[in-house]
Image 1 (cartoon, rainbow, N blue to C red):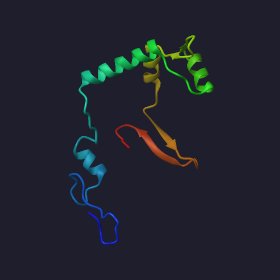
Image 2 (image 1 turned 45 degrees about the vertical axis):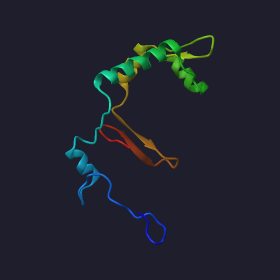
Image 3 (image 1 turned 30 degrees about the vertical axis):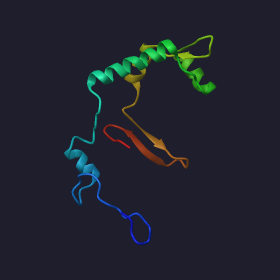
Image 4 (image 1 turned 180 degrees about the horizontal axis):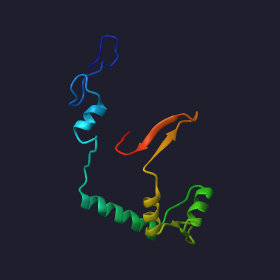
Length: 119
């Protein structure tokens, strides 16, 4: 709805009761996790992605990133595609931090990614 000044006036969206913050609501409804896929669909997507990375490969857009990948166990074919073995993906998933902070251009914390936080 628009006001007389032509600016959009805020309207209530969703099911939050007045005065209830989103974080409070998230705790009430399962910490904000929404899933539109079944576990089987997630598994199939993951396995397909592993196959693409290992068999088809990917283009590494930055030389430094490509060097890190090759040092870590990836291979590069004659077409310049980098292939990522499934075992390397599994190792990466086991060693990745549970959460990490993303900083803005000024070096200030912008987002704390991990856990049940969603942006």
